[in-house]
Image 1 (spheres, rainbow, N blue to C red):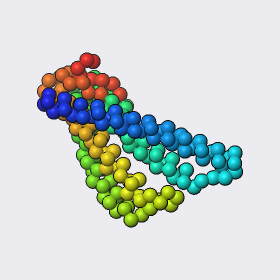
Image 2: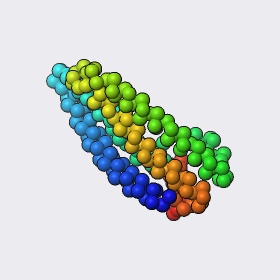
Image 3: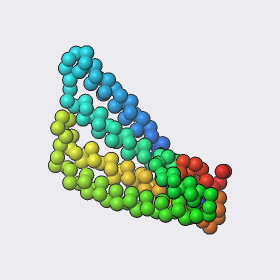
Image 4: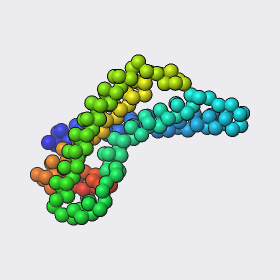
Length: 181
C-alpha cells in the first residue's frame, strides 16, 4: 500500500502543480481578454464577439484545472451538519470512505460522459472563434481523470488508515487527518 500511495502522491503532486500553473495562466489570459473587451466596448464604442466566448471557455477550463487541487486538500463542499455529528466518532473513517468511494465512482462516470460529449461535438463549431466544440469539451474527461487520480490516492490513504489508524495523512472536510495531525 505504501508504494501505491507514494506513486499516486508523486503523480498527483506533479499533475496538480502543472494544472495549477495552467489554470493560473488561463486566469491571467482571461483577465486580459476581459480588459480588452471592456476597453473596446466602453471606451471605443466597438466590441468583439469573440472575447466573451473565449473568456467563458477559459473560465471553464480554469475551473476544471483547479478542481484536482481543491479535491486533494479537501476544499470541496461538504455537508457540515452531518459531518459535525460523526466527526469525533470512529464512524468518520467509514463515512469518509463511503463519500470518497462515491466521488470516485461519479468521477469515472464523468470521464465516460465527458468523453462521449467530446466525441459527439467534433462536427460542431463555436460561433465566433470557429473552434470545434470538441476542443472546448476536451477538458471534461481530462479534468475528471485528474480528479479521479486524486480520489484514488485519497481512497488508498483512507483504506490504509482503516488498518493502521493515523498512518496516512488525508485531508477530509477541509482539515488534515492522519500522520502529522
